[in-house]
Length: 67
Length: 403
Ligand code: HEM
Ligand code: SF4
Image 1: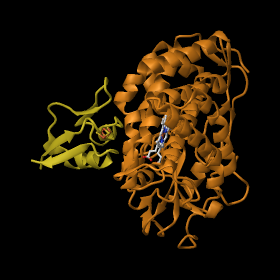
Image 2: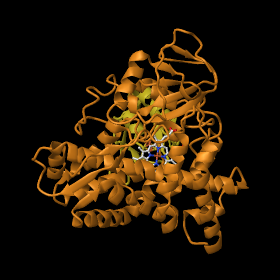
Image 3: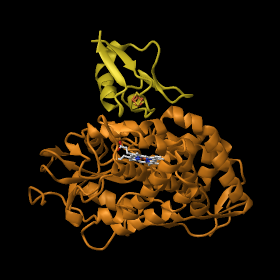
Image 4: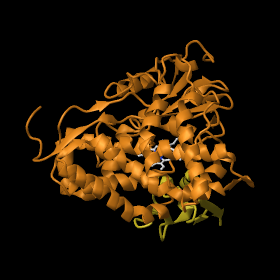
């Protein structure tokens, strides 16, 4: 199963919980401290980690859509 | 409420005991951990102490079961009404939204030049004086000045924060098993009421004035709500940062090797900050109350029981952080619970991280720091906050002499 990952950059507060849950997928921009999805990640491999990241975001900034 | 079964693990832990301080506090957490994943303490009305990383994080992640609405301190008697920390969704979400803008990464970035200026001023003056009490001269004034900029508090108002906060801690730590939350916070609420009146009159452009017109749930915010929000900024914004800054500087003077390493490579500052947050957990323990029966690490916990989630113990869980008592800036400290986790995770995290890293950088631009007397620690303030109360330091050649 694969997902599209969207981060609401206006909500993200830079906690980095998503990076802890799915380090292969998320990273924090060193300038803005806002999360981004690393280019070229293969979302089909990371289902459980992605769902954990979504659930762990304190501000609900991560949205997963099944594709 | 007594534990369900008589064979539950027990521990004698009073969060307000003056004995809970450096260095013995860590042994108390290890005693609790050894007793069991959830150990019952009879003190202050009775509560469970949870110490393992996975259990603490799971509870923080599950606000439906582990409610904040009865308070974040023991006893969870419903008399704590700090916004947003003592609320559950949906009200928590709405309150928190009102406060987010003041503390967003974008806002912290905007404030960076101000932070750099403020910290340079404080540190440079301290160095020129040859040192002094780092707590009184730098660690306390720093967050107070930041709060004037961040929130719009009057300079004279923030001067009183320390006094009214200490009165609050003293009120909470009273001898009896009861805790009078309403009495303890009275002075700080009076101070906030005066700030609101002053802003109504002056209309100064800042967070306080914005709050006067703010809405929650489609209705205007009440004055009591404004007072509570401002009091949270006043207390959460200064006690924690003060303790974190002093704890970092204590580390530098107590372990000169760590200081040398940082001075040789100031880019390590954010790592020192993170590892300090894990290793020392300046905000150590947060309470919740169960909304239904639940099992923690095999221990049954009844509905309505108070639970103390020890972030400090979780951050030294050897199952999560090997050799946990060792301060090691090279370890991967990410995911530590020093700022909590989940929907109540610290709103001030980005700000605090930025302030603390800038502070270390600035200190590295000056001669090495050395201890100039004995460090003193208080007991856990409010059952939670740990940091030095006095930290005499001086500047000069690296402290190679003994003593
Ligand atoms: C290093 C310094 C700090 C530490 C260690 C710290 C720690 C924490 C922790 C552990 C929580 C979670 C409480 C819970 O789960 O019940 C929290 C919440 C909070 N912190 Fe901090 N904090 C720090 C600095 C700050 C600053 C500078 C501010 C504001 C200026 C701030 C404002 C808040 C607020 C408003 C909450 C409540 C969030 C909510 O309930 O949704 N903190 N903090
Ligand atoms: S967990 Fe949420 S708030 Fe935190 S960095 Fe990721 S997207 Fe941003």
